[in-house]
Amino acid sequence: MYDDVAYETDDGIAEITIDRPEAYNAFTRETVLELNEAIRAAREDDGVYAMVLTGAGEAFCAGADVTGMPDWEEMRMEEYAGYLWAVQNVVRQLRAAATPSVAAVNGPAVGAGCDFALACDVRIVGTDASLREGFVNVGLVPGDGGAWLLPRLVGEAKAKEYLLTGREITPREAVDIGLAVEERSDPAVGAREFAAEMRDLPATAVRHTNRLVDPEQSFEAYCERAIAYQWECVNDPEHAEAVAAFGEDREPEYDREYA
Image (cartoon, rainbow, N blue to C red; front, top):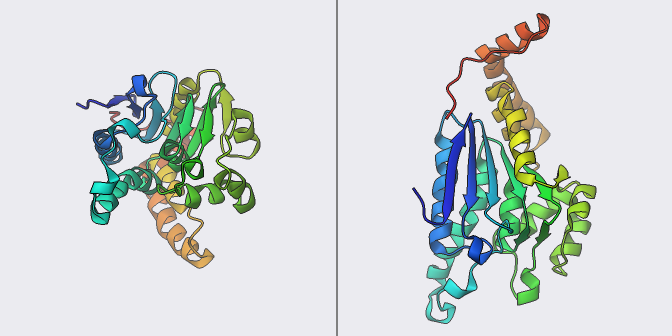
């Protein structure tokens, strides 16, 4: 289906893998387009209840593949903006998805690759993982969302420590500052387990809860949305089944078709 991205679904979980291991999963324009398509496919598939994003081989994503980049000096600003918009749209899609996403950070996640991991709802880091914005080290700004995402995840002061120096975030640091849920020797397994845990809960409640986590909204806006979402949940057959299963001390059985 794709050249630079592997896309698989199994028991309601879509696994999206950046598949350029020979380049540490550094992306080209084509990779970015395929990644956007794969995320969109997962978001639009009613049989997908959670997403896992990872990289093939020893890296999560080393950012942009500089060997395949166009000559910026020959481009108009509008052309560059179009390219950068497509990279940003990976982050945009992950942030906007009601379907929850888990990043299995199996190795270095650098620059935009770091931002792809930050855009996921949850991160599981491997023992060989590292996260690094690193844009300042090459004379650039975090153009893909990092300076917006990181302060919301770890606080402004801690985020600036990493953003303004390009310092690496180690697996232990990622867990300690709340950026990652846990460190695992095999983060892909951990990510699938976490995704399965979310998949097995009432789907409408999970998706609407994910939508409600929005630090930009006011409390009153939150309350209005919560009323609408809660009303949808209380009329959802999966809510009724979950309550019945709890009362009968059994596992719930939802009427679903998994992708």
